[in-house]
Amino acid sequence: MRTDLVQILNTVMDRRAAIAVGGAAIAGAATAAAAGLDALNPFASTESREASRIEWQQYFQANYRVMTEEEKQESLARLERFHELRNGTRIEVSGAEPRANVLFGYAFNVSKCRGYMDCVRACIRENNQDRKSGMAYIRIHEHKKGDFDFEKADDNFFHEVPAAGHFYLGTQCFHCQNPPCVDVCPVKATWMEPDGIVVVDYNWCIGCRYCMAACPYDARRFNWAEPEVPQDELSPNQHYLGNRLRSKGVVEKCTFCIQRSREGKSPACVEACPTGARIFGNLLDPNSEIRWVLANKKVFRLKEDLGTDPKFWYFMD
Image: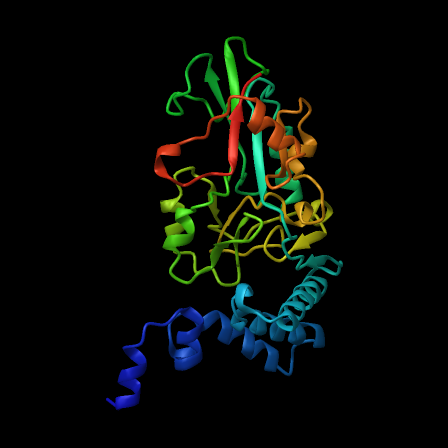
């Protein structure tokens, strides 16, 4: 075997580095190679060839975190054009960066939640989650009063709420300040942004699911099949690191509705809650509602002993 080839094979490489060095013969390149061949097919329509070229370019693009601003804008434009070619409708994919002096946090008033699930439905719609699998980032747990044991809680209740003698507690991604999911990702497809939001680059995720195993809060979801979102229910205002359409074989999660929060809006779940149980805001703003809650209420966090430092608190009136 040639010396230079031995050196290549002995080098630790991520997926795209391996494909770039070894070409289509390396495992994992089949999808990209097929897209590339489609782009050269003289019998395909102009639109089909263009879509295939875009798909090829998306597969080989760099991790969003290390892209230049120009590369990011090119990537966003490709996503918009790809959707238009495939579906005939326009979407807007934002690359809005974190705002200065902002660190997002969340508080949940257990006394006010009635288990209505408006938050869950709003989250699914806003974040373009797969309808066929019933994926949901938010879970509402029904507990018997006085019992916080999650092993005994009912996560799939189908009855009139609120039920007598019970209370309700919601969970989702807690956007830990020390996120174990980030530490275990072998290709650095997930990280924490300066505003505290833990994100995923879906183009870079290889679907190993190490992050799911590492998360102590069961906050991540895996796409076992190609997600299905009806066109008439598609949320068109998207963010590259948030609610843009995902694909089969990648992990996704709550991003505090990054497409909304970075525009100064509350996440969809906060806006949809009919009882005001959900509070979201800037932890660095001493005048924010969430800072008032932390200063004036007796708050607690789940599994604090793990040292994950979640930016998600619970309290009761």
